[in-house]
Image 1 (cartoon, rainbow, N blue to C red):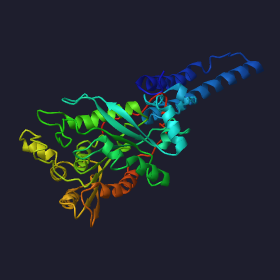
Image 2: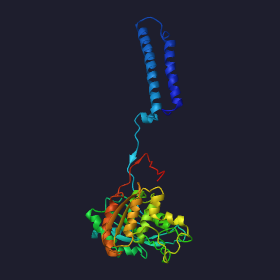
Image 3: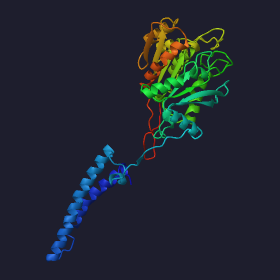
Image 4: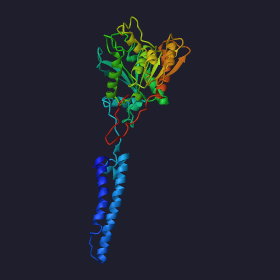
Length: 387
C-alpha cells in the first residue's frame, strides 16, 4: 500500500480514533479478579492501550506530514529501499569493428585517420554521396572505447568536394597538431558532399522544385554519422564550419537548426544566399523564403537562436568583413557573434589554412569534450521534451 493518498490518510484517522475508544471500553474489563498476578496483567494491558493510543496519534501526524510533503511514497522506500545507479556503456558505431586495424595502425604512427563513408539520403532529389570522416587518434585508444566524441561538420565552398578539406586545407594534419598541442578537442570531422545537384551551387538550401540539400546536410548526415561512430546526438556536441560559400552555409544552417548545432565558424563567408548563373533561382521567386535564409534578416526579424558564431573575415576580401560586422550588430542574446577580422588576406586557401587552428580552438571552447555516457538510475534515462 502506498504511503500517500486519501486511503492511507483515512486509515490513519480511523486507527487514531479507534484506539482511544478501545481504551475506554476495555479499561476495566481485563481480568477484574484480585491478586498480584491480576494487577500485573491489568497494568500491562492498560499500558499497552495507552501506548497504542499515543502511537496512533504519532502515526496520524506522520502520515499527514508525509502526505503533504511526499517524502516517502512506499513502505520499501521508508524502510531504506535503494535506487539502482549503474554506469551506461556507449553504443559502438557500426564502423568500429571494421576500422579496428586501421585505427590501431594510425595510433601506432601517432596520428588520426581519414576514412570514407557513404551517406544515403532520405531527402527529395538527393542520392547517396561519399563523405570523408577524420577520426582523432583518441578514437582508437584504449580507455576511450566507451566515450562519445564531438563532431564538426565541414562544408566546402562551391565548387568543392570532401577532398578539398583533406588536400587544399590539410585538415588531418591541422587537427592532429592542434589536438596533440592541447589547443583542440579530439573532434570527429565529417566532410560531406555539399555539391549534390550536378554542379549547381545550391547554397545548401532546400531548393524550390529541386533537391532538399539543407535536409541532407543536417538530418541525413547526422543520422549516418551517429550510427557509424561513437558520437553524441546532443546539440552541444555538434558544430559547423565552412569556407567561402560553405561559410555562408555553416552560418545559415546553424541559425536555422539550433536544435542540432551549438556553434558555427564561417571562414570568408557572406551573409546572404548568392543569386547568379551558378545558383539559378533557388527560392522560386519567393522573397520571404530568401529572407528566411539570410542570417542578418533572421537575426533582425526572428527570435534569436541559441547559437554561437565565429565569423572570420578580411578587409581585403570583398564584402566578407562588412557582412560579418552587420550580422554582429544585429545579433541579440542568446545568439552570440565573435568576430576575427584580418587586415589583409585574399579569398584563397593559403589564408584559410592559417585560420583553421583558430577556428578549432574556438570551437573547443564551445562544444562538449569526449565523455563517457552518464550513469542510469533505475533503468531510466532523461528524455528531451523541448530543444
